[in-house]
Length: 566
Image (cartoon, rainbow, N blue to C red):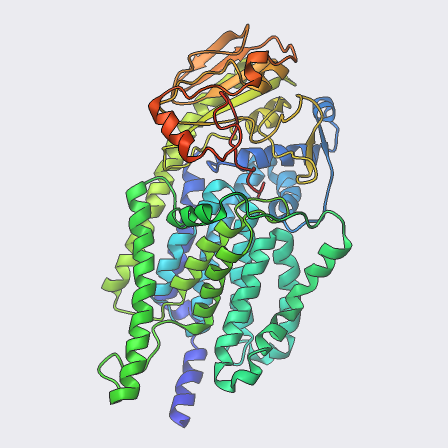
């Protein structure tokens, strides 16, 4: 017993900077910034719209065009991470460069949180860390939900610090002040994003629950008491108007939740993403099976070889991962006006589950999860470079747009494509560089802080998104925002067959065109009625999704509610 205690003390005293595995893992974590560093533009779907919001927010009504087109109502909500950081970064580096620097910092911070969490728990780096790194570039980060991504990174870092202040950590002398750390962590992470705040609570509660399992069932309530300091933001949500909103599961929620699991590691390559997801699931299941078999053999025959009663899943992370995955089925899809609240918990829950795998094999075995991460990172980096070339082509249209232009943007997003359409909110650059009115902003009343004063009803996200089959003809004659704008910017891999009435083509590039519009303010009567499907493929799609409103309407926007703006 004394020998075991001495060994544990020796392990705790190890310095991270003397461990080659820690340095290798940190290098891999820092490499996660490569997509941002290697591409000229930040190729996250929603991020141009976020930068447009930052531009209006930072302008304070000084620009006459912004003052005419937009208003901004500041609200203290659990979704302000980058919105607060952009103030000093934009002042020092400028808006676009400052936002880009913040985005470049988020992936490495997430990786550092993953590495530190395993080191704090087990004082070594194993399979769990290297598998977890593949979740840095999750669908949430690719979508551009940067406030959540920042909050998730902070949650991992605060969790690791909390472990270090525990009875077996290097900062155990400060254990009496753990509640103060959790109090500050709860406020900081909640301000960044409310879903990341939930992740932190579950991780701390799961770790504490695992450590108290041996104390008997009568003390299982203590993890809730440990997490209590992190619930201070609940007081803020109750007292300050605008910090909470209606929640909903959406229509046919069970079909949606099932489909999000298939997309838990969605990026640009269908085969790679599915292989990665199956690899992660197999690793988790294998860890659970080995744990059960090892504990069973230990009780039956006193153990055998490596099945000597050891646990291959660290309960301090395993219970938290299980809790997050259960919550992904329980929580609504829409929370506080935002979308994909449960989708976030799937990706994070799987990340925490693989981090729980407690196995440190030889380096040649560790090269497999490291190689998977490297391949996924390279795929994302190359994808960003290709998408940036397309963004450069689209931004050529700005040479023909005057200051303060009213622009109706239309972006074709085929239903059949697996990869993300990174150009959906490219119109945000027009807001930033031309102080324009564009219909792709997150600006729904009572949900977002940004509001649009002109452009007619619905001149906001998702009115710019043309969601249809790739086999269906692209017809822009019934794009309703086009009749409230002076310019039309179309982005899509398919050439449109029709343009809005009296539109004059000004410029056309690869997969993009710019047309001038008369801005009559009157939508033709023919555009107010649904049209029949245009092909057998479209009829088949509409039959499956007939419960969705306005799906058959030419030029209709995405029938789903908008994503959370961060």
